[in-house]
Every structure is written in structure tokens, then in C-alpha cells.
Image 1 (cartoon, rainbow, N blue to C red):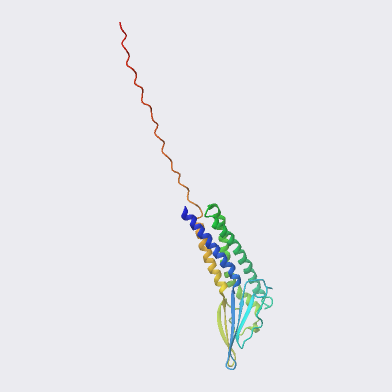
Image 2 (cartoon, rainbow, N blue to C red):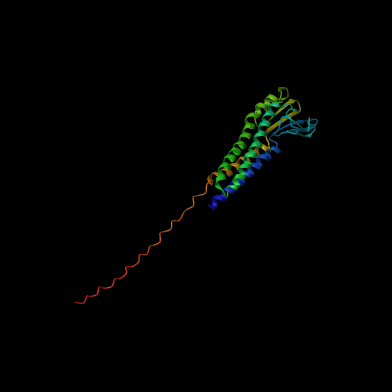
Length: 246
């Protein structure tokens, strides 16, 4: 019984760690896009855009950094400011789901930790943990499946220097030579937040499995004591009858 209680405690702790990792993804970029330009006359320059989950109007959900002769059009902006409204819709859906996943996971972790003393709390902890697990895998799959289509609507054809780019696939690279002596290199794909969500999924899953396998304490074995022997009193010897005188 003690082993199952300890495993439930460990399972609840893992669900808590997974929930913290899940909320940490909100502060990490989920997608990155880099455009590099090489010229025989001016050298090399690159511009990198990092996208975060958040509200479409929230400033800082898209951040830019540059090197060489390239300059960012902005240091940070919103999806609406960058005219990426379709991409912003995916970002806000992911943002809401990640917060909900953290809340369900955190509550499940609290109940999971409390189930060490009371196995009746393991079942609701298990249900909440499963919801957090589903969210942790749903959001990166959503980004993988829906982001290229959204970017293909947001990025005008006139701004596409190559046929392949973030508007055509979730990750990849390409290069082109639009002018003599000028080479454009593009690279795009998921960033640390996207990978971190898979780590959160794995940790949450292990915690949920531990809660499931140890959700109940084994029944206590009741020892039946053998009945005590009943002592039967020995018969009292009777006195021999006396002879009656004639």
C-alpha cells in the first residue's frame, strides 16, 4: 500500500512539472522565419521573425531581429500590425488552449499529490491530467497542420521570393537568385515553444500513467482469529451408595 501511495505522489508531482512546462511555452517563440540576403557588393544580412502565442492585437507576439545590412521593419508588433490575421487566429486559439491545459493540469496535480493519503482523489486527478495531456499534444498538432495555410493567406504573392516558404510547408528552407550577384536564403520552422510542448506532453503522460496504475489502494487483509477452545468441566464423581443395614 505504501508503494502505491508513493507512486501516486510521484505521479502528481510529474503532472505539476508538465503543467509548468506547458505554461512556460507561452513565453517562448513557437515559430521562426529567417530571410538572409547575400550580395557581392554589400555582403550578407538577415532578418528573423519569431512568433508567439497570444491575442492578435497583443504587441510583442511577433518580434524581429536583424544582422548585417538588413534592418527590421519593427522590433516587435502584433499579428494585426503585421497583417497576419489568419495566423493570429491560430495563435490565439493555441494561447487559450495552453492556459486551459495549465489550469486543468495544475488542479490535477494538486489532487494527485493529495491522493497519497486518500485514493478517492486519484480519479478526479486522473481525469484532469488526461485533459492536460490532450491539450499538450493538440496545440502543436494544430500549429503543424494549420499554420502553412494561414501564412499562405497572410503573405502576399508579391512578397514571396521563392515558390517554397512558410506558406507552403511547416518547416524547410529554400534559396533563389532574383538578381545577378544577389542570393536570398529562406529558412522557417518550429521554435523552442513548439518543441517544449512535446516535452510537457511526455511528462504529463508519464504522470497520468502513474496515477492510473496506482489509483486504488489494495484492500486491507483482515485476519480472522480462531475461536478459543471451550473448556468443559469434568464430571463430579458421585459417592458410592451405602449399604442399608438389615
